[in-house]
Image (tube, rainbow over all chains, first blue to last red; front, side, top):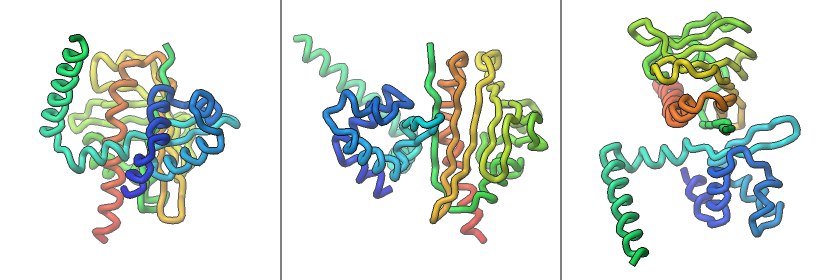
Length: 106
Length: 144
């Protein structure tokens, strides 16, 4: 679990996870293009995410495709948030979102 | 609409043979595969099904590729809910990779383009299932 938190502690790596959630199966080239990062830097970050099992890879021919692996994150949630608490926490988040939207409209 | 493949991974402190047994034996699957017992002779082109305790079939498929104890590819139909059952068969690949300190089990569920309801249902099902598989295998090893 240490390596999961270490991997998540970096903003660029969290951005990469966001990208993979939006574009499952993206290749290194596809990930590097719109980010303000060299291909080498992206590749290094991906290696850290892979080692933490937050990113799973699949080879199709010579292309390496990257996927967000949700299992470690779900296990962190399960460890500290019971199903009942998850429901309440989600309602609180929804309430905050609704209030913030109201605030913006003013 | 094109739907992406789903890929799930867990690390399991065990051997490929033990993990393979957990995937292919009904005694094991009943502990983590939502109570179902796997039924198959595990040969190429054979049918495979996961049977509920009441004898009905929760899901089934055909074995496309088998290479014990590393790789199993089957087609997949979700039969446990009436809205899922008519969807086109998709494909599930189980891969076991040996590492220095254990194994990585990877489940890839793809060819889901024409099975959006199955896509949504299994997105949350697989993490619980393979997490459960890992816990069973590791608990059995430490009980010895």
